[in-house]
Length: 254
Image 1 (tube, rainbow, N blue to C red):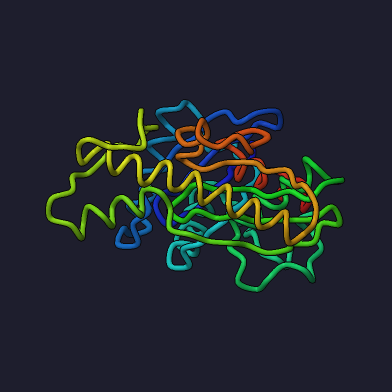
Image 2 (cartoon, rainbow, N blue to C red):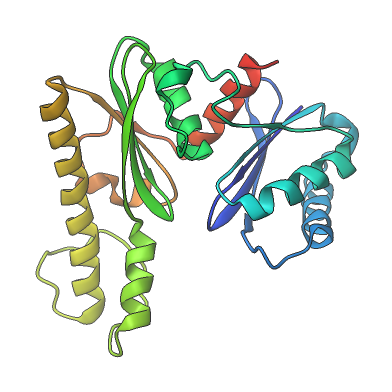
């Protein structure tokens, strides 16, 4: 079984793939203050409670945008399974044109682009990832990475409002019934949800205008399904898109 680990700024997502499907998926809060031992206990407990034995893990792949956690999780995987995980970088096979991959491109976005190109090898594809940051990553039919746009994520924007204003409450994000909020919660929902829907549409519009072609747009990330009813551009929404990219890259480097 393949262990996939995606270390993000907010969560560490760990999933187990049996060759056909994702068997189990766990989310752990990303905390650079935790020790390797603490993370190992957490992972051991999650695996034990899911009924997965250590011996069933035969390979592992790791994507990380938090350098301080990368080595720590690598060590844990080796200690638990005696496996050195493959670490995603532009230096390994991704199915993309290596020379086109920017040095600063996050490994999560690399996974997104790899799987997007795998799905639509004859089209230009953009993956919109609603995570801690809202990212727009685009790849053409040649497998060349065209570029990325980055904005604060929806929750990042809400938390910033909550932290820096005295009278605005913490808000659960959902589609508002009206753009005209009549209380603080609905007003924030209107500004964030409808505002971000407009942001997404404008980035896509400008990308298509610059490239002079219609592109395929995919969505992933924690809030993608929440906001997708406001955006009619997505070919589909898949919360597992980044993990599928990880699994693809693992297979290409087997």
